[in-house]
Image (cartoon, rainbow, N blue to C red; front, side, top):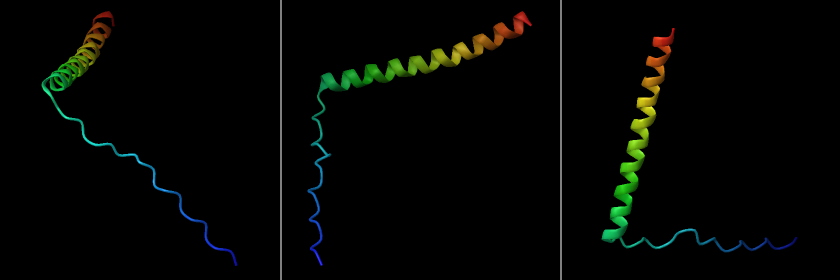
Length: 57
């Protein structure tokens, strides 16, 4: 019989946490507001298309 093959080392997939400073917090807040605005735009566009469809029907 042969010996079992040794297991490869586990990959290093975790990284140390990033220090949150004021600049990073500001960027995250701006990104959150932009995404929220995008959601509102898509939702409003859906209602607008529905109303336009009803008006042209």
